[in-house]
Structure formats: structure tokens, C-alpha cells
Image 1 (cartoon, rainbow, N blue to C red):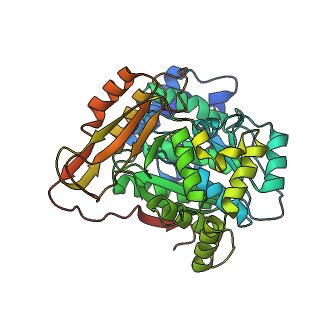
Image 2 (spheres, rainbow, N blue to C red):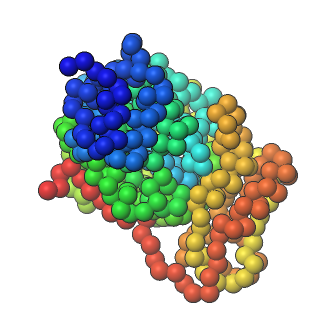
Image 3 (cartoon, rainbow, N blue to C red):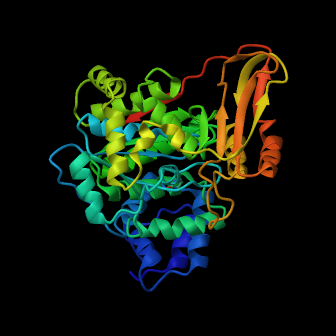
Length: 439
Ligand code: URA
């Protein structure tokens, strides 16, 4: 039967499932001639937002997008792992987790992205290390993974190109926040990258794309189904983004914090979080039981192997590895200002989206696509959720190139940290965990 895009739009609008053949043709027309015009793709995306897709359609869309470009296959003589975060504030997990996992014997070829909106991106963070290159040629990427088991590079243009095109359309047509579309976008790229074991960090809360547990669980369920349909081993961890992750938000300042953890600080909240996630990946990769993997991941941090691996990765990607011994070489911007508590009490909320937006105003993110980043800009938190404070205690320090940026961000940040009279209830960072091995 001939393919007609207007038929697909009508069916999706009316909640009639598309066939696999229709989805394959639709995705083919995103990148190959005859191209489906943007206005029809946009109309279909909006229909998906209102009517949804069935699980089978979501899986078919994911696979077709996976196959729209190059798919990677690894033959490294050991388990290959990957990790993806759905995007958060202060999320420097990859910088800590990749060297831990690699130093424990698992290969981690990782493709990462730049910051998006109020959320930061691993590529921007790594580029704050002087000389560090994230644009690796395929041969160099492979050689580095063979030599030191980890590499973090910018996603190549030929990996799931249908997602690249659709994502750009979704961005400007208010169709980003559809769970099946997010699933297909993330999983097409993850499956194309070729890892056997995939850890998905699904952020949930005010600073995340998924604002509540119900939506986050639904996204996790769909992503696990896509991984399973493709024969991959996958765990989805729902993690709290009602507060920033760790104590620093920005680029150089987050690399500094990652180095502090890798230099042996296994017990801080961020250290424990990254060790738990790394241990789950090691367990999936067959390194041992949950307990053995937790011990291994912890030892990699306390014994220095993970920091050494991070230094090797920096050298391999052309960067100055002396920052791992002297993190202060990662310069912070010259203007700074500290905000203090107006009253005594307990830190009862830290609005991560507001904090993320303030970090963008300070220069740590982009307002428009072509903006350049001030790597030294950002925020250091002095308190975390649940801490007790006295009146006048420092809450956070902002760093920026200009005083006027501090003025603007201060207005925003005044609202972002709440101090209450009563101690708030404890909230774990890891809210839930699902796996393709469940059932
Ligand atoms: N990240 C992605 O790669 N795609 C989405 O749709 C949302 C977050």
C-alpha cells in the first residue's frame, strides 16, 4: 500500500495505531527523499502529544529511529556499558561513574550532549578542562576505549539522525513533553550506540522533564520495553531532581566537585549516589553480586583507581590532567556574591529548575543556540536539603563574569532556597529502580 503522511496524521489523531510499515516509512521520510515536509511532521508530533502511541508503536518508532543512521557494534573482549540521564541540574554523574566503571573492568564508550534549557550537559562540563576535546574521530574514539576502557565524546551527526531532525522540530512546536516521543528519542540513540548494558537515570521533580513519579515510571517502563525488545539489559533508576545533585552547578565548578569525589570522598551524598549507580552497572555487566560491586566501586574511589582513570581519559582527549591534582586550576569567574539565610530553621526546599535557570543567567548555560558558555560561572551551595541553618549562615555563592549577572541571578535565587521552622522529612536521592530482568 502506498504511504500517505496525511493518513498517518489522521490515524494518530483518532487514536488508531499505525502499522510497523507505516512507522518505518514515516521515519524514512524524516531523513531520506522524498522528504516528509516539516508541517506534516509537526502535525503528526502534535497528534502524538494529544493521542499518545501504543507500546508497540513506541517500540517500532524507537527501532526505526535507531536504524535511521549508523549503528555501533563493539568487539572489545569484555562487557560494554552505557548510561544516560534524562537531564538535570548539577548532574555530573557521568564524570564520576565512567572512570569508576572503567577502572573496575567494564568498557564505557559514552556519547553525551550539551546543556539543554536549564539543565547542564556533560560535554560542556568536560570542555571546561583546558585542552579537552570532545569531538573524537571514530578511530580515535575506538582506540581510546580499547586502551583505557572509557571515552566521553560528542554525539556524531550520523547516530540516529531522524532524532536530530525530530528533536529540532519538537523543540519549536511545543511537542517535547510527550512520553512516547521522549522514549523514542533517548532509546534510539542509546540502542544505536551499541552497549549491552544500559543504565537509565530518569530524573523526576521540579528540575526534570518528568515532574512526577507517575510520568517518570511510565517513561522508565517504555524505555525498558524498547531495550528488552532489542535484547539489551537495562536498568532504569528514578532519581530525585526536586533538588540539585551535589553542591555545585556550572561547568568548571562541577568538574572540581567530581574530582573531589574521585579523590576519595566516597561518603558525601553525591559520592554515595555515583557509587550506587556505578555498582548497578557493574552488577549488570556480570562483575559480581550487588554487594561485591558496591565494594569494588567504593574501593575504586577510596583507593584512587577511578581518579587515575579520569586523568588518563583527560590525557587521551588532549586535556590538562594536572587539574585532577590541582582542581583550583579550573578557574571560577572573577565576580562572586554569597547569599545568606534570612532566618534560622531547616532547608525545606531547593528549587532546582530555578537554580538551573539562575546558573544560565550567570553564564553557565546558553540562552540561545549560538551563545558561548562562561566555563567559570556557576553556583556553589553551602547547604543541602534538610540541613539546619542559623540566621546569616551562607546558603550559596554565585560566580559570574559581571556584577550585573550576579544582580539578575540574585533576584531569582532569593526565591529558590526555602528555610522552614520544622525539619522536613528525609527524601532519598534514589526513588525507585526497575530492570529488564524483573518479571
Ligand atoms: N533527551 C533526549 O535525548 N530526548 C528527549 O526527548 C528528551 C531528553
